[in-house]
Length: 173
Image (cartoon, rainbow, N blue to C red; front, side):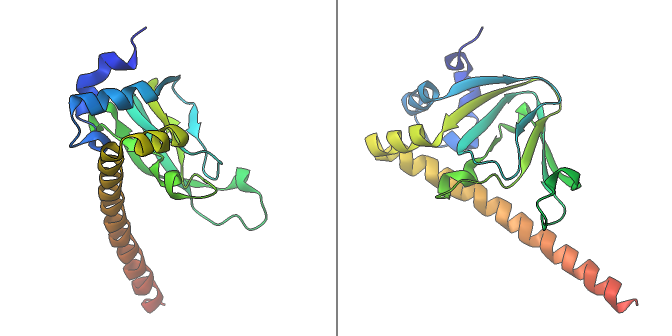
């Protein structure tokens, strides 16, 4: 079985590690664990109390979110909306939002559509390396901030589209 170190060229293309030297990326690789997931398996569930970041190395995943609020604790019957599908070609990372929460809670569910290989970075390991090497921490958190900003800008545009459509639908009545 391949170790994460054999994927160095792949990790050089992951936006989470943009601006890092090869040595810094290798330091991060040594912190991560490889997780293999069969097609159709949940990687994480919306609302789960977890705080790791995932990097999609091989495969395809779907990120989905519940369509309604859980009012009576009956989450099992709620419909979910697929937000995005990602493949290893995207060099995607996800799960980073829980790094900033005191009590982590996943904001979306992620399921594998094809067999996947994931690199998993635990929050405690990331914080440890940030204390040990603040340059790495600075780069990682700058890259996360950039990605979160891009996602927030997209979400704001999506909300504007929804509110516009809702307003037009109300005017039609």
